[in-house]
Image (cartoon, rainbow, N blue to C red; front, side, top):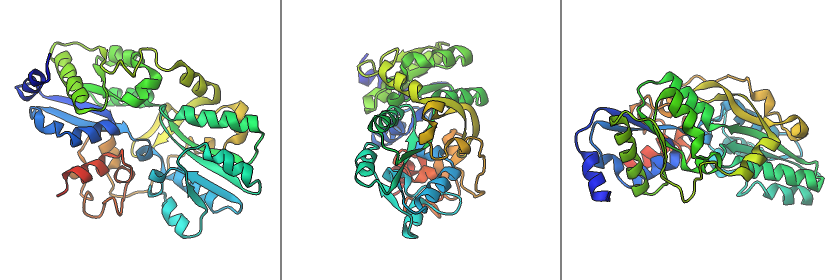
Length: 348
């Protein structure tokens, strides 16, 4: 099957199809390669909740700011968290007000900083899905071995599978899923087998090149039209059926699951990961946020965007009062956020 044949097939007549690409990197690649323009108008691509920054609750930002404002405490965070709105302000705004916030490029930086500055306590803002969680687990292990007592972990770690289960259970209109390639390297392609069987939805694990995504869309279209619902791993050079056993062992050794609040969506049972009892001494209050459902009331429609209910340009704030320079919601902030991606690729 060559690409010309696939393109011709995808541009032809089809039944109405709604395919969710879960990962923000897939969304970005779809725009970068002009894939929407190559498809039949009846094949609709929608974005999913695969941007960890976008689903991080405002209460988490508030807690991070609280630590950063505490004397002798320093908050370490990746740069994409700086502009995410909290209840009152973002980390960037808090830093302008005097909060001690430093951008990190790796959580391992905390080990050197903590050893060099014993009078300070470093709080690592740990946000992410299964792709990045093992790296935080490794730092916890190294902290324990080093004997350092001035490192804490403020976690907003989320599990993808409970979120996909939630979407499958609440949205019957989605025909099929392009599974997130990054997360699949950890979980393995067979992690989706239960969802395909329970909800009769096909999944295709795809890489991030334009051709990878086109092949995945073609595979899913054919599965739906032939009334199949299987997991097809179209990224076998990177994703193994069983996933990454070492990374999964790290996750299971340091974390335990529990309910978590997803900004714009609500509470999803068993979707959060928290430091387990043995390592709870390093927790900076993450577990206390598990049941926090507080949400600032705004006209932001990021929640509907994350669930594929609307496209970003259907939000009345998009491109007007909400832009990357002055984001009103998290989907406009992150490089993996759907609104930000749409803004970059659709605005003239």
